Image 1 (cartoon, rainbow, N blue to C red):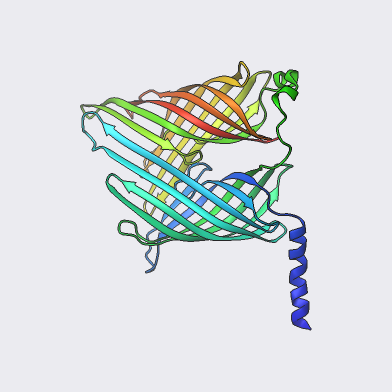
Image 2 (cartoon, one colour):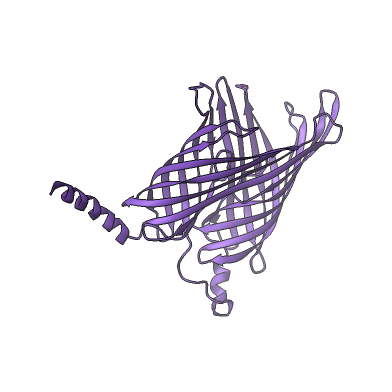
Length: 367
C-alpha cells in the first residue's frame, strides 16, 4: 500500500505540471559564472569566467526551445566564430582560429517551474593549421519563471564534461547561469495591407532586447616602442557568439517620436590563480527611425581593459550606424546594420582603433 501511495504522491504534481504546459517555443540568451577545471587527478588549476549574455567564451549563449510534449522539450544551442590577425610589419606573427560549439539537450519539467536537462556537445577548434573535434556531455538543473505574456527568466546550474583529444585536454565546466527567453508562438503578424499605418508612425520603436553577429573588421594602428604598428583583425561571428571589439547584447528603449535609446553591453572577467583579466564594452546611442523601417544611429562607446592586477584603463570612442528592420514573428524582429566605431589613442596606450561591422541581429520585444 505504501509504494502505491508514494507513486500517487509523485504522479500528482507531475500530472499538474503536464497540465500546465511548461514548454513552448522560445528563443533566449544566457550568461553567468563558469569554472573550468582539468578533468581527473584532483589538479588545483582552474579558470573562472564571469560572462555577460552573448559572450559565449565558455558555453553557447543563444538557445532555442522546441517542445515535444508539455513536459519534454529539445534545446539546441550554438556559438561560432572565426578570427584572423595580420600585422603589416610582422611585429607579431599572423594567426587565425575557428571555434564552434553545438549542444543538444532534452529538458524535462519535473514540477512547477523546475526542470532537469541532459544532452551532449560537439566542439570544433582550429588554431592556424591545427584542428580538433571534442565531444562531451552536459546536465542541468534549473528553475524558470514567466515574466509576462511572452517573456520568461531562468536560473540553472549546469555541468559539462569534455573529453580529451590530441590537442585539447579533458575539462569539466561548472556553471551558474541566468537566462531570458522570448516566446515564439502567438498571433501571426498581420498582412501589410491590414496594418494601421498611422499607428506604425506613432510607435516606430518598442522596448526590446536583442543579440547581434556578423562580419567585423578592426584596424589597430600607431607607434609603440619606437616602431610603427599596423594590424588588421577580422571576425565572422554567429549572433550572440561574442566579439573582442563589439558588444553582442543590446537593449532598445523608446524615447519620444522617432527616437530611441539603445545601449549595448559585452564583456567578461577571467581569473586564474594569481591573475585576473577584465574586458568590458559599452556603447550608448540614439536611434532615429527614418523612412519605413530604416534607421540611423549615433553615440559613444567605451572599451575597458584590465590585466594582471595592474590598474585598468578605458578608451572613449564614437559610433555611427545605419540599418533596416524586418519582421520575423509576432514580437520578434530582425535587423541588418552597418556600423563604424572609432577609438583614439591614449597616453598609456598609443594605439588607435577603427572598427567596421556588417551585422545581423534578432530583437525580442519586452512589451
